[in-house]
Image (tube, rainbow over all chains, first blue to last red; front, top):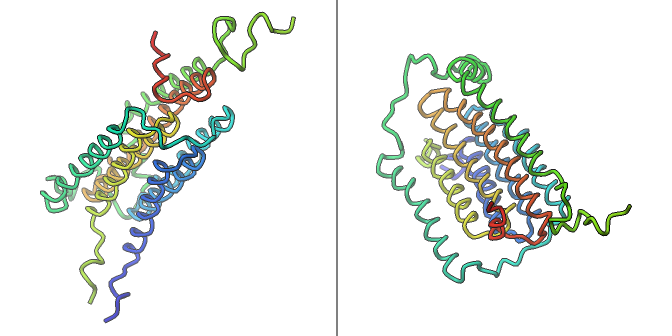
Length: 201
Length: 106
């Protein structure tokens, strides 16, 4: 028996996409240049999208690429480029003295240990719930996942769906209010806005 | 015969999601650039959506995937408002770190 016999396609996909996810996540944290961090974030988002595909969430995988990689990361890069803050950060500066990174490492290990302990204590199940056999919201393998998702979204979660439209309107109004130029330019030290005295008449 | 390691159980996905979540949390704590801190929040959100999809398959319930749609919407709204705040801050002070967000105090 050879070594390749144990390799199922799902295992290969999981290992490759998982490696991309973790390398991308480490890249976000460890890259001094924020532009490189944003590009590492794309790698992680892509890895998560592949893992969605591997778990038969095809629509969500497409949405993950379109919304996250296509819109959110591009928004990050727009802000970085337009404001010209894309220079590398000095990572050797520890804001609160030496203790902060040690404390952050301990907190991170704790955050990692909690779910792993929960998984280990339940034998890899992490939940006591059992898969329903005839529930109305059970995944039906014969219909596309986008149909079931749409049905769930527009029946069970209709109120929540309508509320997200309110949330999006509030977010757009908030962004416009926050990002507009301040009118009373003489009261702020803004290098981009000329003060009243030096403004052209 | 296939080896026992070949079975990718849902627990593997949950472990991977916890690792990504922990990396994002540590990044949020150690980085000082507000934009990079935001990217770390996105990492944590993505780890959580991965667990939702995993539980959706594990428990055979499509509502887990519906929640992921809402997480996406909330993430988009949060990024828009957060980047608005960061733009307002960085325009005043291009070298601002997270500590300088205290200028937001009313």
